[in-house]
Length: 227
Image 1 (tube, rainbow, N blue to C red):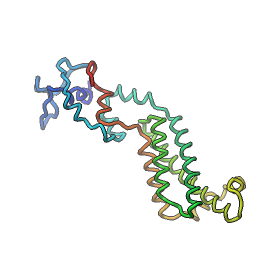
Image 2 (cartoon, rainbow, N blue to C red):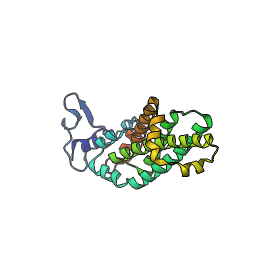
Image 3 (tube, helix red, strand yellow):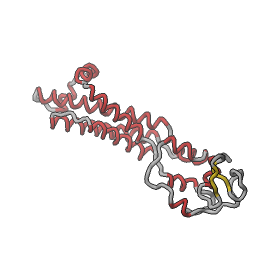
Image 4 (cartoon, helix red, strand yellow):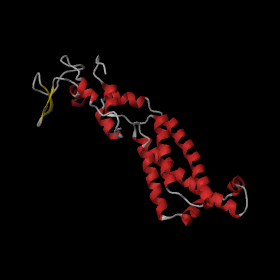
């Protein structure tokens, strides 16, 4: 067993003691743990378990570094990237239409809506994808960014429809999308890039599955113990 796997037992055992140089030791032997599979002297410390944080969620790197290889493989087997991407795109498209509707109705491009889009895409991907791997965050960032650009483009089409007194969908169908990049470049503002960057970051950050310290303990509590 690795040191990390040993600590799953030691951190919640009444027989633990802290040494400033060696770290967590067994007070029965005075040494670091060296057992295999299960500690015969393990005694659960209820107070240590109760004191575990059950509110603050850990980020991806903290989770993958704290769990055993077996638990990590189990979490990875529960991942569903296609479902996460589908959910992210679906939410992103709806959010893009919503942003365009707000922008056209108010006449103002409210940047904070882009941040909301990034968060919505990320949370949707987390719920449906249960992702741990890096690809989930990268996909979330890309989808969030594209959704913001899509919403911005829809806003422009909406303003064009109003200018020429046409219906939105009629304008959308007849719109020459070959000029998309040029139009976005002409209408872009420095502040837009700032909000896009935040949206992409949130799409990345929120796409990963999250656990609290206590939830990780539940996943990896020593065999035969109760929580």
